[in-house]
Amino acid sequence: MKKSLFIVLFVLFFVQNAFSKPLVVTSTYILSALVKQIGQNKIDTRFIVPENANPHFFNPTPKDVQELSKANLVIGVGYGFEFWFDKVKNNIKGNTLMLSDYYTNPIEKKILKGQIIANPHIWLDMNFVKNTAVFEIAKNLCKIDSKNCQFFMQNAKVLSQQISHIQTNYENLFKNKNICIVEVDPAFDYFLSSFGQKTCAKMLQEGSGELSIGNFKLLENCKCKKGIVIYAFRSKQAQAIAKEKHYKPVYLSPLGNSKDNNQDSYTKLLEYNLEKLKSAIND
Image 1 (spheres, one colour):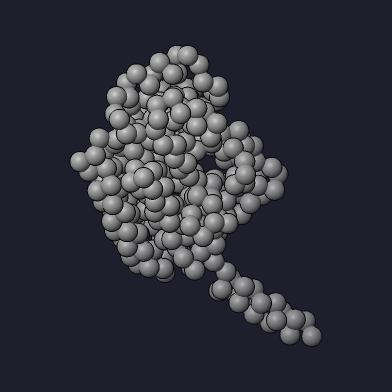
Image 2 (cartoon, rainbow, N blue to C red):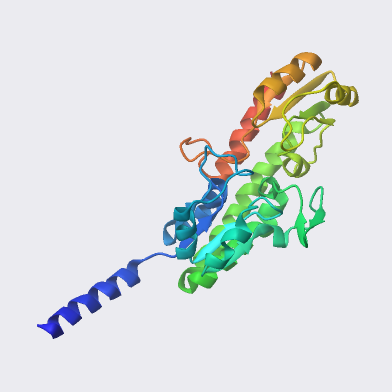
């Protein structure tokens, strides 16, 4: 009887482990979506920061900490984006990948308590993602699932090519056009530079909310007849700026959306934002 029970338990243990997938936990949904495009059905992915929460002010719950402790791989942005990471890192038993470790020349770089703090929105830099991030993610997936390493690396290569194609479409959209870009939220500096654009005015910094006379004075740098005002969170301010300059307000999504079929993968997010810009510029 005992022998039979032992055999049953052994078989159940073997089956469970044979078919279990590595768990990758990321800080945000869009990182999880990026990982999923590389790992596909070979891995399980979860994310910590709820999609309706501001990631700059989020604190993990005990349940989140438990999730992180079960992960084979934890992936974050870095540069202070996961300001809570130091509180939970001792609970992480698996591997850790911070994308900022592979980024050069971050914007607004400073050293705080021995750590590099900078504009953290590097996942929107198409050059970085296609040339570096997708392959570092694939390499880290190889560490936790070596038998599928070739699969991960091939998917990373395909994804890199897809991003490159979309990036070309961005470049072509702005080619030979004199379009001024006003940035309301500080989320899109890397994004714009990855297809050769920059802002004529950056209106608000992280944490600030109301426009001042000084903010509006920055618009003197925007001398184009045609322009766009891009924003992620501050719609009211974007509308006020657009009215002042007779530019088009354009909502862009920095984090994707798991419940929106147009934004539920990294490449779909890029295409979604491309269509938003195209609609405003060609209007």
